[in-house]
Amino acid sequence: MNRRKFLRQSALAAGALAASRLGRLALPPSVVAQVGVTRKRVIVVGAGLAGLVAAYELTQAGHDVTLLEASTRPGGRIWTLREPFSDGLYAEAGAGRIPETHDLTLKYVKLFGLTLDPFYPSGGATLYSIRGKRIKLRPGETLDLAQLPFGLTPEERRLGLDALQAKYIDPVLKELGNPAAPGWPPERLKKYDQITWPEFLRSQGASPGAVELLTALSGWEDDSALDFLRDDLGHRGAKHLTKIRGGNDLLPTAFASRLAEKIRYGSPVVRIEQDVDPKGRSVRAVSLEAGSPQTHSAERMICAIPFSCLRRVEVSPRFRPEKHAVIEQLYYDPVVRVFLQTRRRFWTDEGLNGFADTDHPMEIWNPTFDQPGIRGILMAYLEDGLTRRVAAMPESERIRFGIEAVERAHPRLRVHLEA
Image (tube, rainbow, N blue to C red; front, side, top):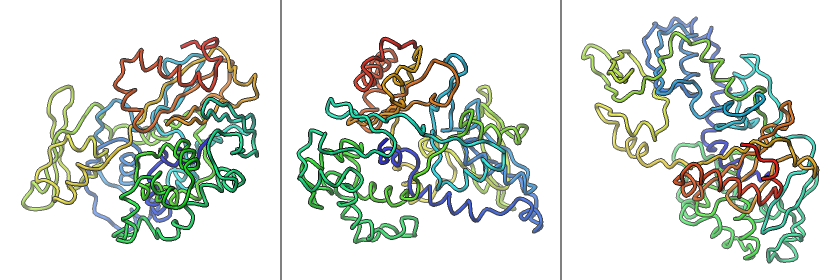
Protein backbone atom coordinates (compact mmCIF):
# COMPACT_ATOMS: atom_id res chain seq x y z
CA MET A 1 0.00 0.00 0.00
CA ASN A 2 1.15 3.50 -0.83
CA ARG A 3 2.82 5.09 2.18
CA ARG A 4 1.89 8.59 1.04
CA LYS A 5 -1.81 7.96 1.52
CA PHE A 6 -1.22 6.48 4.96
CA LEU A 7 0.74 9.58 5.92
CA ARG A 8 -2.00 11.81 4.61
CA GLN A 9 -4.77 10.38 6.72
CA SER A 10 -3.11 8.98 9.79
CA ALA A 11 -2.27 12.34 11.36
CA LEU A 12 -0.77 15.71 10.73
CA ALA A 13 2.97 15.70 11.34
CA ALA A 14 2.67 18.40 13.97
CA GLY A 15 0.09 16.36 15.80
CA ALA A 16 2.28 13.29 15.68
CA LEU A 17 5.21 15.26 17.04
CA ALA A 18 3.07 16.72 19.80
CA ALA A 19 1.84 13.26 20.74
CA SER A 20 5.41 12.01 20.86
CA ARG A 21 6.40 14.81 23.24
CA LEU A 22 3.37 14.20 25.44
CA GLY A 23 4.14 10.51 25.57
CA ARG A 24 7.58 11.24 26.96
CA LEU A 25 6.67 14.15 29.23
CA ALA A 26 3.33 13.13 30.75
CA LEU A 27 3.70 12.83 34.53
CA PRO A 28 2.49 9.66 36.23
CA PRO A 29 -0.81 10.45 37.99
CA SER A 30 0.70 9.77 41.40
CA VAL A 31 3.37 12.42 40.81
CA VAL A 32 0.78 15.07 39.97
CA ALA A 33 -1.27 14.20 43.03
CA GLN A 34 1.74 14.27 45.35
CA VAL A 35 2.76 17.84 44.60
CA GLY A 36 -0.29 19.10 46.48
CA VAL A 37 -2.20 20.69 43.61
CA THR A 38 -5.46 22.24 44.84
CA ARG A 39 -8.48 20.23 43.72
CA LYS A 40 -10.28 22.08 40.94
CA ARG A 41 -13.49 21.67 39.02
CA VAL A 42 -12.76 21.14 35.33
CA ILE A 43 -15.08 20.86 32.33
CA VAL A 44 -13.77 18.85 29.39
CA VAL A 45 -15.66 19.34 26.13
CA GLY A 46 -15.53 16.37 23.77
CA ALA A 47 -15.07 12.66 24.51
CA GLY A 48 -12.75 11.96 21.64
CA LEU A 49 -9.37 10.55 22.54
CA ALA A 50 -7.93 13.95 23.50
CA GLY A 51 -10.83 14.73 25.82
CA LEU A 52 -10.82 11.25 27.33
CA VAL A 53 -7.09 11.42 28.06
CA ALA A 54 -7.45 14.86 29.65
CA ALA A 55 -10.39 13.79 31.79
CA TYR A 56 -8.67 10.56 32.84
CA GLU A 57 -5.40 12.23 33.86
CA LEU A 58 -7.15 15.04 35.70
CA THR A 59 -9.31 12.54 37.57
CA GLN A 60 -6.24 10.49 38.48
CA ALA A 61 -4.69 13.70 39.82
CA GLY A 62 -7.67 14.26 42.11
CA HIS A 63 -9.61 16.93 40.24
CA ASP A 64 -13.40 17.07 39.84
CA VAL A 65 -14.08 16.52 36.13
CA THR A 66 -17.24 16.76 34.03
CA LEU A 67 -16.91 15.49 30.45
CA LEU A 68 -19.52 16.76 27.97
CA GLU A 69 -20.00 14.75 24.77
CA ALA A 70 -22.45 15.60 21.99
CA SER A 71 -22.91 12.03 20.72
CA THR A 72 -23.94 8.88 22.57
CA ARG A 73 -20.59 7.11 22.37
CA PRO A 74 -16.97 7.83 23.33
CA GLY A 75 -14.09 7.96 20.89
CA GLY A 76 -14.84 10.76 18.43
CA ARG A 77 -12.98 9.89 15.24
CA ILE A 78 -12.10 6.47 16.62
CA TRP A 79 -15.20 4.60 15.49
CA THR A 80 -15.37 0.84 14.98
CA LEU A 81 -18.35 -0.41 12.94
CA ARG A 82 -19.83 -3.70 14.12
CA GLU A 83 -23.29 -3.28 12.58
CA PRO A 84 -24.64 -4.20 10.09
CA PHE A 85 -21.89 -6.76 9.41
CA SER A 86 -22.50 -10.49 9.87
CA ASP A 87 -20.69 -13.14 11.92
CA GLY A 88 -19.13 -10.67 14.34
CA LEU A 89 -17.05 -8.94 11.64
CA TYR A 90 -16.01 -5.34 12.21
CA ALA A 91 -14.20 -2.54 10.39
CA GLU A 92 -12.91 0.92 11.22
CA ALA A 93 -14.93 3.92 10.10
CA GLY A 94 -12.46 6.17 11.91
CA ALA A 95 -8.79 5.89 12.83
CA GLY A 96 -7.57 2.61 11.38
CA ARG A 97 -3.82 2.49 12.03
CA ILE A 98 -1.47 3.23 14.90
CA PRO A 99 2.01 4.28 13.73
CA GLU A 100 4.93 3.41 15.97
CA THR A 101 5.61 7.15 16.39
CA HIS A 102 2.35 7.66 18.31
CA ASP A 103 4.00 7.23 21.69
CA LEU A 104 1.09 8.47 23.78
CA THR A 105 -1.48 6.21 22.15
CA LEU A 106 0.77 3.20 22.61
CA LYS A 107 1.33 4.15 26.25
CA TYR A 108 -2.38 3.90 27.01
CA VAL A 109 -2.82 0.74 24.94
CA LYS A 110 -0.26 -0.87 27.22
CA LEU A 111 -1.72 0.70 30.38
CA PHE A 112 -5.16 -0.79 29.70
CA GLY A 113 -3.82 -4.21 28.71
CA LEU A 114 -5.01 -4.07 25.10
CA THR A 115 -3.41 -6.27 22.44
CA LEU A 116 -1.90 -4.92 19.23
CA ASP A 117 -1.91 -6.78 15.92
CA PRO A 118 -0.17 -5.87 12.64
CA PHE A 119 -2.25 -3.64 10.41
CA TYR A 120 -1.07 -5.41 7.25
CA PRO A 121 -1.14 -9.18 6.69
CA SER A 122 2.27 -10.84 6.58
CA GLY A 123 1.39 -12.98 3.58
CA GLY A 124 -0.37 -12.61 0.27
CA ALA A 125 0.19 -10.10 -2.50
CA THR A 126 -0.82 -6.44 -2.46
CA LEU A 127 -2.52 -5.30 -5.65
CA TYR A 128 -1.68 -2.19 -7.66
CA SER A 129 -4.44 -1.13 -10.03
CA ILE A 130 -2.89 1.46 -12.33
CA ARG A 131 -4.10 2.62 -15.74
CA GLY A 132 -6.13 -0.55 -16.15
CA LYS A 133 -3.24 -2.86 -15.24
CA ARG A 134 -3.38 -5.19 -12.23
CA ILE A 135 0.05 -5.76 -10.71
CA LYS A 136 0.55 -8.11 -7.77
CA LEU A 137 3.37 -7.43 -5.33
CA ARG A 138 4.29 -10.13 -2.84
CA PRO A 139 6.06 -9.30 0.43
CA GLY A 140 9.60 -8.16 -0.29
CA GLU A 141 8.94 -7.37 -3.95
CA THR A 142 9.18 -3.85 -5.35
CA LEU A 143 7.10 -2.26 -8.06
CA ASP A 144 8.78 -2.60 -11.46
CA LEU A 145 8.22 0.81 -13.02
CA ALA A 146 8.92 -0.61 -16.46
CA GLN A 147 5.55 -2.41 -16.23
CA LEU A 148 3.67 0.88 -15.94
CA PRO A 149 2.38 2.93 -18.89
CA PHE A 150 4.13 6.15 -17.88
CA GLY A 151 6.75 7.98 -19.92
CA LEU A 152 9.63 7.63 -17.46
CA THR A 153 13.23 8.20 -18.38
CA PRO A 154 15.52 5.13 -18.38
CA GLU A 155 17.10 6.33 -15.12
CA GLU A 156 13.70 6.79 -13.45
CA ARG A 157 12.57 3.30 -14.48
CA ARG A 158 15.69 1.78 -12.93
CA LEU A 159 15.24 3.56 -9.60
CA GLY A 160 12.02 1.95 -8.42
CA LEU A 161 9.13 3.78 -6.76
CA ASP A 162 10.66 4.68 -3.38
CA ALA A 163 14.02 5.72 -4.81
CA LEU A 164 12.28 7.72 -7.54
CA GLN A 165 10.41 9.76 -4.99
CA ALA A 166 13.49 10.13 -2.78
CA LYS A 167 15.48 11.48 -5.72
CA TYR A 168 13.22 14.50 -6.00
CA ILE A 169 12.32 15.24 -2.38
CA ASP A 170 15.23 14.20 -0.14
CA PRO A 171 17.49 17.14 -1.03
CA VAL A 172 14.73 19.58 -0.03
CA LEU A 173 13.83 17.75 3.20
CA LYS A 174 17.17 18.84 4.64
CA GLU A 175 15.98 22.45 4.44
CA LEU A 176 12.79 21.94 6.43
CA GLY A 177 14.06 22.06 9.99
CA ASN A 178 11.59 21.21 12.76
CA PRO A 179 7.94 21.72 11.73
CA ALA A 180 6.94 21.82 15.42
CA ALA A 181 9.23 24.79 16.16
CA PRO A 182 7.60 28.18 16.90
CA GLY A 183 7.48 30.38 13.82
CA TRP A 184 7.78 27.50 11.37
CA PRO A 185 7.89 27.68 8.39
CA PRO A 186 10.68 30.22 7.92
CA GLU A 187 10.51 32.64 5.03
CA ARG A 188 12.83 30.57 2.84
CA LEU A 189 10.33 27.68 2.79
CA LYS A 190 7.21 29.65 1.95
CA LYS A 191 7.91 29.33 -1.76
CA TYR A 192 7.00 25.64 -1.44
CA ASP A 193 3.64 26.60 0.05
CA GLN A 194 2.82 28.54 -3.11
CA ILE A 195 3.12 25.56 -5.46
CA THR A 196 1.42 22.18 -5.67
CA TRP A 197 3.08 18.79 -5.32
CA PRO A 198 3.12 18.22 -9.13
CA GLU A 199 4.60 21.69 -9.67
CA PHE A 200 7.28 20.94 -7.09
CA LEU A 201 8.21 17.68 -8.84
CA ARG A 202 8.57 19.51 -12.14
CA SER A 203 10.77 22.14 -10.49
CA GLN A 204 13.05 19.37 -9.20
CA GLY A 205 13.58 17.94 -12.68
CA ALA A 206 11.08 15.08 -12.69
CA SER A 207 9.99 13.96 -16.13
CA PRO A 208 6.34 14.42 -17.13
CA GLY A 209 5.85 10.68 -16.70
CA ALA A 210 7.34 10.73 -13.19
CA VAL A 211 5.15 13.69 -12.22
CA GLU A 212 2.07 11.85 -13.48
CA LEU A 213 3.02 8.60 -11.70
CA LEU A 214 3.93 10.12 -8.33
CA THR A 215 0.86 12.34 -8.35
CA ALA A 216 -1.45 9.46 -9.29
CA LEU A 217 -0.14 7.20 -6.53
CA SER A 218 0.06 9.86 -3.84
CA GLY A 219 -3.33 11.55 -4.08
CA TRP A 220 -1.61 14.91 -3.45
CA GLU A 221 -2.65 16.76 -6.58
CA ASP A 222 -3.91 20.11 -5.31
CA ASP A 223 -2.22 20.40 -1.91
CA SER A 224 0.82 22.56 -1.32
CA ALA A 225 4.25 21.01 -1.75
CA LEU A 226 5.22 22.24 1.71
CA ASP A 227 2.34 20.28 3.24
CA PHE A 228 3.53 17.13 1.49
CA LEU A 229 7.17 17.65 2.53
CA ARG A 230 6.21 18.33 6.14
CA ASP A 231 4.12 15.18 6.22
CA ASP A 232 6.92 13.10 4.77
CA LEU A 233 9.48 14.42 7.24
CA GLY A 234 7.21 14.00 10.23
CA HIS A 235 6.46 10.36 9.48
CA ARG A 236 9.79 9.08 8.23
CA GLY A 237 10.03 6.79 11.25
CA ALA A 238 6.46 5.48 11.05
CA LYS A 239 7.05 2.29 9.10
CA HIS A 240 5.40 -0.21 11.48
CA LEU A 241 1.60 0.04 11.73
CA THR A 242 -0.64 -1.75 14.20
CA LYS A 243 -4.30 -1.95 15.21
CA ILE A 244 -6.06 -2.99 18.39
CA ARG A 245 -7.28 -6.57 18.46
CA GLY A 246 -11.07 -6.56 18.64
CA GLY A 247 -11.39 -3.02 17.26
CA ASN A 248 -9.73 0.32 17.86
CA ASP A 249 -12.76 1.52 19.81
CA LEU A 250 -11.59 -0.64 22.71
CA LEU A 251 -9.16 2.15 23.62
CA PRO A 252 -11.76 4.93 24.10
CA THR A 253 -14.06 2.36 25.69
CA ALA A 254 -11.34 1.60 28.25
CA PHE A 255 -11.10 5.28 29.14
CA ALA A 256 -14.87 5.69 29.26
CA SER A 257 -15.34 2.73 31.58
CA ARG A 258 -13.06 4.46 34.09
CA LEU A 259 -14.89 7.77 33.71
CA ALA A 260 -18.45 6.47 33.44
CA GLU A 261 -20.12 8.70 36.04
CA LYS A 262 -18.22 11.78 34.83
CA ILE A 263 -19.34 11.61 31.18
CA ARG A 264 -22.58 13.24 30.05
CA TYR A 265 -23.51 11.86 26.62
CA GLY A 266 -26.00 13.59 24.33
CA SER A 267 -24.83 16.91 25.72
CA PRO A 268 -23.62 19.16 22.88
CA VAL A 269 -22.08 22.41 24.08
CA VAL A 270 -23.62 25.47 22.42
CA ARG A 271 -22.08 28.28 24.48
CA ILE A 272 -18.87 28.86 26.45
CA GLU A 273 -18.46 31.77 28.86
CA GLN A 274 -15.06 32.67 30.31
CA ASP A 275 -14.18 34.59 33.47
CA VAL A 276 -17.80 34.88 34.55
CA ASP A 277 -16.87 35.15 38.26
CA PRO A 278 -15.32 38.57 39.08
CA LYS A 279 -13.73 37.10 42.24
CA GLY A 280 -11.71 34.51 40.41
CA ARG A 281 -11.12 32.74 37.14
CA SER A 282 -14.05 30.58 36.10
CA VAL A 283 -15.89 29.22 33.09
CA ARG A 284 -19.39 28.10 32.20
CA ALA A 285 -20.56 25.76 29.49
CA VAL A 286 -24.14 25.62 28.28
CA SER A 287 -25.11 22.28 26.75
CA LEU A 288 -28.36 20.89 25.40
CA GLU A 289 -29.59 17.75 27.12
CA ALA A 290 -32.79 16.27 25.69
CA GLY A 291 -33.24 19.65 24.02
CA SER A 292 -33.12 21.64 27.26
CA PRO A 293 -30.22 23.99 28.11
CA GLN A 294 -28.08 22.94 31.05
CA THR A 295 -25.39 25.13 32.62
CA HIS A 296 -22.13 23.66 33.96
CA SER A 297 -19.71 25.77 36.00
CA ALA A 298 -16.04 25.14 36.73
CA GLU A 299 -12.74 26.85 37.36
CA ARG A 300 -11.08 25.53 34.22
CA MET A 301 -12.09 24.10 30.87
CA ILE A 302 -10.38 21.98 28.23
CA CYS A 303 -12.02 22.25 24.83
CA ALA A 304 -11.18 19.06 22.91
CA ILE A 305 -13.54 19.18 19.95
CA PRO A 306 -12.53 19.68 16.31
CA PHE A 307 -12.48 23.26 15.11
CA SER A 308 -15.19 22.35 12.61
CA CYS A 309 -17.47 21.77 15.64
CA LEU A 310 -16.10 24.65 17.71
CA ARG A 311 -17.11 27.06 14.94
CA ARG A 312 -20.74 26.39 15.85
CA VAL A 313 -20.23 27.17 19.55
CA GLU A 314 -20.90 30.69 20.83
CA VAL A 315 -17.88 31.87 22.84
CA SER A 316 -18.00 34.88 25.17
CA PRO A 317 -15.80 36.79 25.22
CA ARG A 318 -14.57 35.80 21.78
CA PHE A 319 -11.16 34.26 21.33
CA ARG A 320 -8.46 36.74 20.41
CA PRO A 321 -8.43 37.51 16.65
CA GLU A 322 -5.42 35.32 15.82
CA LYS A 323 -6.90 32.27 17.53
CA HIS A 324 -10.36 32.93 16.08
CA ALA A 325 -8.87 33.10 12.57
CA VAL A 326 -7.17 29.73 12.98
CA ILE A 327 -10.36 28.12 14.28
CA GLU A 328 -12.36 29.48 11.36
CA GLN A 329 -9.84 28.77 8.62
CA LEU A 330 -8.22 25.43 9.49
CA TYR A 331 -8.89 22.99 6.68
CA TYR A 332 -9.98 19.40 7.30
CA ASP A 333 -9.53 16.74 4.64
CA PRO A 334 -12.81 15.01 3.78
CA VAL A 335 -12.90 11.21 3.75
CA VAL A 336 -15.50 8.70 2.53
CA ARG A 337 -15.35 4.96 3.19
CA VAL A 338 -17.58 2.37 1.53
CA PHE A 339 -17.73 -1.10 3.16
CA LEU A 340 -18.60 -4.14 1.04
CA GLN A 341 -19.34 -7.49 2.72
CA THR A 342 -18.61 -10.59 0.63
CA ARG A 343 -19.87 -14.15 1.06
CA ARG A 344 -16.30 -15.38 1.05
CA ARG A 345 -12.81 -13.92 0.74
CA PHE A 346 -12.50 -14.61 -2.96
CA TRP A 347 -9.35 -12.53 -3.41
CA THR A 348 -7.32 -15.22 -1.68
CA ASP A 349 -7.94 -17.44 -4.75
CA GLU A 350 -5.44 -15.20 -6.57
CA GLY A 351 -3.00 -15.15 -3.68
CA LEU A 352 -4.02 -11.58 -2.80
CA ASN A 353 -4.21 -10.18 0.73
CA GLY A 354 -7.15 -7.90 -0.10
CA PHE A 355 -5.25 -4.60 0.11
CA ALA A 356 -4.89 -2.54 -3.06
CA ASP A 357 -3.55 0.81 -4.18
CA THR A 358 -4.97 2.61 -7.19
CA ASP A 359 -4.20 5.51 -9.47
CA HIS A 360 -7.34 7.25 -8.18
CA PRO A 361 -7.48 8.99 -4.78
CA MET A 362 -8.61 5.68 -3.31
CA GLU A 363 -7.19 2.76 -1.37
CA ILE A 364 -8.76 -0.64 -0.78
CA TRP A 365 -8.39 -2.22 2.65
CA ASN A 366 -9.19 -5.69 3.92
CA PRO A 367 -9.98 -5.21 7.63
CA THR A 368 -11.00 -8.86 8.06
CA PHE A 369 -7.80 -10.66 7.05
CA ASP A 370 -7.18 -11.72 10.66
CA GLN A 371 -10.82 -12.10 11.71
CA PRO A 372 -12.38 -15.59 11.89
CA GLY A 373 -15.02 -16.79 9.44
CA ILE A 374 -15.44 -17.19 5.71
CA ARG A 375 -17.10 -13.85 5.00
CA GLY A 376 -14.97 -10.79 4.41
CA ILE A 377 -15.09 -7.01 4.07
CA LEU A 378 -13.41 -4.85 1.46
CA MET A 379 -13.33 -1.14 2.17
CA ALA A 380 -12.98 1.59 -0.44
CA TYR A 381 -11.17 4.52 1.19
CA LEU A 382 -11.81 7.65 -0.88
CA GLU A 383 -9.82 10.82 -0.41
CA ASP A 384 -9.37 14.39 -1.67
CA GLY A 385 -11.72 16.08 -4.11
CA LEU A 386 -13.36 12.78 -5.03
CA THR A 387 -14.89 12.55 -1.57
CA ARG A 388 -16.92 15.73 -1.92
CA ARG A 389 -18.53 14.44 -5.09
CA VAL A 390 -19.26 11.02 -3.59
CA ALA A 391 -20.48 12.42 -0.26
CA ALA A 392 -23.04 14.53 -2.11
CA MET A 393 -24.56 11.44 -3.75
CA PRO A 394 -27.64 9.63 -2.40
CA GLU A 395 -26.64 6.59 -0.36
CA SER A 396 -27.61 4.08 -3.05
CA GLU A 397 -25.50 5.94 -5.60
CA ARG A 398 -22.56 6.13 -3.18
CA ILE A 399 -22.68 2.38 -2.69
CA ARG A 400 -22.87 1.80 -6.44
CA PHE A 401 -19.88 4.08 -6.93
CA GLY A 402 -17.92 2.15 -4.28
CA ILE A 403 -18.77 -1.19 -5.87
CA GLU A 404 -17.66 -0.02 -9.31
CA ALA A 405 -14.45 1.48 -7.91
CA VAL A 406 -13.47 -1.72 -6.07
CA GLU A 407 -14.54 -3.82 -9.04
CA ARG A 408 -11.83 -2.24 -11.18
CA ALA A 409 -9.27 -3.83 -8.88
CA HIS A 410 -11.28 -6.98 -8.08
CA PRO A 411 -13.30 -7.89 -11.21
CA ARG A 412 -15.02 -10.85 -9.47
CA LEU A 413 -16.49 -8.68 -6.72
CA ARG A 414 -20.15 -8.77 -7.81
CA VAL A 415 -20.20 -12.57 -7.91
CA HIS A 416 -19.43 -12.67 -4.19
CA LEU A 417 -20.92 -9.36 -3.00
CA GLU A 418 -23.43 -9.79 -0.20
CA ALA A 419 -24.12 -6.37 1.30
